[in-house]
Picture 1 (cartoon, rainbow, N blue to C red):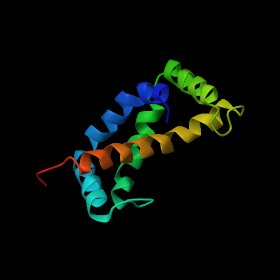
Picture 2: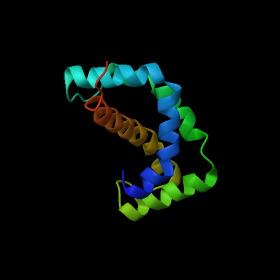
Picture 3: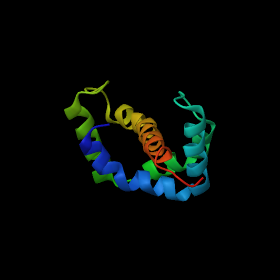
Picture 4: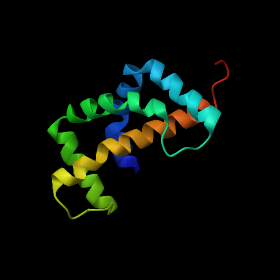
Length: 110
């Protein structure tokens, strides 16, 4: 995810994290205990919130996300808008895990 995409999705990602506070702690714990994994069980708790938050974005934000994707030259950059937008929930999840990973190693009191 590039800086423009992060800027556009910053509030959405924070909202998802706040909605699932207990799952956020569980995700951090799983990252801390197990190290790098391709999928953590706690991610399942975020899936509905990620989808809901993404689909609640205004049209202007969605258009800006499509433009940012095309500008970055990502996979399917010349494809349909809907196909590009379908990739974003996975990117939101990936960014959420990255933030949890950084937070897990900063957490002192479990």
